[in-house]
Image (cartoon, rainbow, N blue to C red; front, side, top):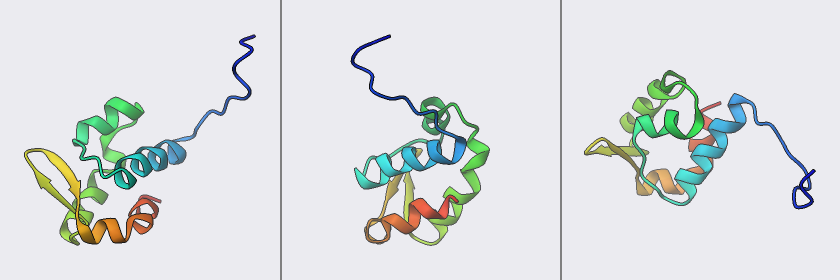
Length: 85
């Protein structure tokens, strides 16, 4: 056993989605839809409709295939993350 590993957790789909968006939204990092699948191993279909709704409501915007968080989205950051659940 590796003496540097104290514990190990296996994340379920909900946790993986939450962690992905916590990192993207709180750090204000733009993302492409396909990045979601690339980094999480999950289907884009899990988030695509919700991303469209967030764009429509003014929390995200799309430019050159990247999604960015708006000022409004940044203010309601926790709500954005919860929206996926």
